[in-house]
Length: 79
Image 1 (cartoon, rainbow, N blue to C red):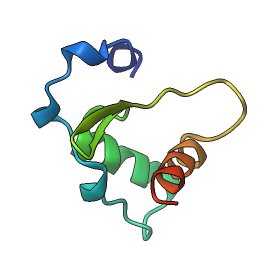
Image 2 (image 1 turned 60 degrees about the horizontal axis):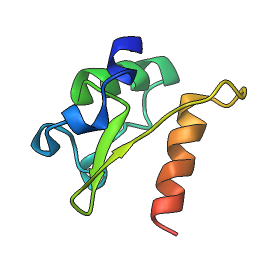
Image 3 (image 1 turned 180 degrees about the horizontal axis):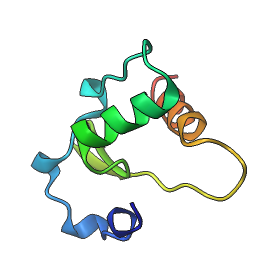
Image 4 (image 1 turned 90 degrees about the vertical axis):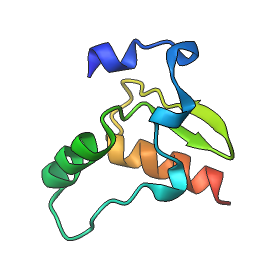
């Protein structure tokens, strides 16, 4: 994950990352299973595209879970 996080946004091929509208996360699995499935399906949790633009997600050490951070980003996009 650290290696994936360090990738420069200029190095990303927009066609190689998922559109945020296409990201599906099962609610039937526990959190560890969801994270594992997400990493297998999308390979790099730090990059998405939305409306034809690349988005890089960064996490800080603020005691929030990755799920909380991703949910917050998604909520902000669709307000």
